[in-house]
Amino acid sequence: MAARESGGMAAARCAGRIGVMASVAVNLALLAMYIRRRYFGGGRSDKDIVPSKGKPPVTSESVVNLDHGDPTLYEEFWHGTGDRATIVIPGWQTMSYFSDLGGFCWFVEPGFEREVRRLHRLVGNAVVDGYYFLAGTGSTQLFQAALYALSPAEDGTPMSVVSPAPYYSSYPSVTNFLNSALYRWDGDANMFNGDTCIELVCSPNNPDGGIRKAVIKSNSGKTIHDFAYNWPQYTPITEAASHDIMLFTVSKCTGHAGTRLGWALVKDMEVAQKMIKFMELNTIGVSKDSQLRAAKILKAVCDGYELSPASEANRLFHFAQRKMAERWSKLRATVAASGIFSLPNEVSDYCTFAKEKVTANPPFAWLRCHKDGLDDLEAFLRGNKIITRGGPKFGVDEKVVRVSMLDTDEAFNMFIGRIASLK
Ligand SMILES: Cc1ncc(COP(=O)(O)O)c(C=O)c1O
Image (tube, rainbow, N blue to C red; front, side, top):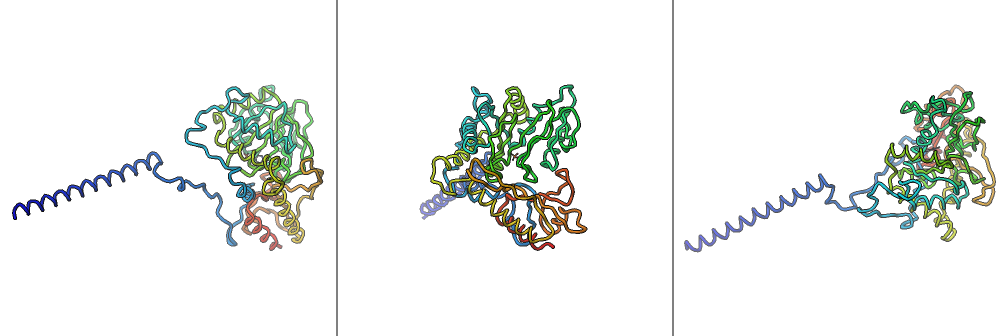
């Protein structure tokens, strides 16, 4: 009996010990998982890492924000391209700072440069032969690199930076925000009467869509051509441009603003080298991951024209041109019916890319209001749940605003509905 009792007790003790050990093991495993997640980010499946959604969806109650040229219009096209525009970068790749030590610019990915040059040859909007190629974190960074490279003036004073009004609202703020001794914003190029300056030539122009040439006629003047919107969905391509510094961006070409990648074509080697110096000091180069992604995206665009059946699902510029034309025709009809608004006149020209006469579809509507007693159009529209950017930010009056034409269908249609109801 005693032996049987002691046998039962031994079994119970043994079971108890196993229970304690199991519980310690479970707790240790949980602790290890917690430490791995907390300090090394591991332990979760890839499904947990999802891209952020950006702006909230538009509802009939919400404010429609068309202040930024956020190119979400393009999402529909890229939904349809699947693997052709997808890249996977394993953990061990793109780790070095360096991309191409044997090339002109050590931080440029050769695949990105190759696809950009291919794209320009396909579209015919810029000469690439004889130009140095640079990548930047958006064309915004390249703009600053170009200012740095072209400044100061010969006598050592800050270089004046000008652009004809209405000018892109970022030009004054980006030029002045560091209060540089090398350059300073000097306003409307048409009012400039100094000796030398840097003229920013944006064509098609943000905000009003105008086709622009440099207005300053001095020999010592320098130009930076901002060609963010010089693509067939926005404007007829009429020539292969060949200016000293030409800036482009994937943000407005393919819609990949979040990739933060732009490029510059630069004629003069010394200027290009100074721009590289700026990039080294500013961000030690440009994301290789972004360049590889952009290379794949641009390859999909070029392949879509050169290697694929001629359908809109393969042809980015045709897709975007149709969408923009549909929006402009809706907007023009609504504005014509309103009696209080007006838009710049429609312009058409022969497009060497489309090989026919086409109408321009600017990325922004430059909307003017003629309602008696209404002075501040931005405030009036805000009161009607439409956020736009008012004329003073572009160097002009308050009765005009810039409205993005590049947002989602929902936002654009809500905007049309709201301005149709304004009297
Ligand atoms: C005329 C113009 N240039 C440059 C940029 C900046 O482009 P990124 O996104 O490449 O910095 C914009 C963006 O809205 C723009 O409108």
